[in-house]
Image 1 (cartoon, rainbow, N blue to C red):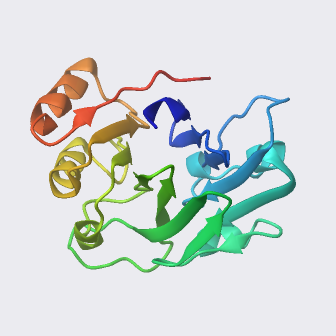
Image 2 (cartoon, rainbow, N blue to C red; image 1 turned 90 degrees about the vertical axis):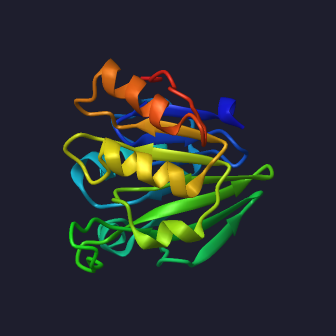
Length: 203
């Protein structure tokens, strides 16, 4: 399943499927194939681009988003936390994604993560989140963690998340200002729980 996942930069990923699932498309080149499903986790600029959604959107494409982003997208399906939708061979479940330094849930401007069940694998895309209590209820095979030194999930948060999730593989993305030393430190911290897969950027 790992070979069917592509990192496109920032927090943008493709899962080949079928169905072809695009998560937070960003700076998509012209002339690409239409996606079957587009998932939007948040309405922040680096995770939400109407122009890129339009490039990937065909007549049968399903666009699924959190409520705040869906307000700006025509014919968009809104999923709320723990709701799910089946499209072709994929089951997509929305999960909470938010940040809080106090441990109290932030309800304003809250985004989503997604659990994508496909080909007998559960892929957890955390979205723009910190280390939150809801993570304890998720047991994925693959975890995709958008990590950034200046974002919601820091390297320390990501290490905590992996130790709770214990996925077979973890795929970091959106590295921001992380260095090679940070990458190596992350590998060492989680080596007992998971295998870290550093995907090459596809574009």
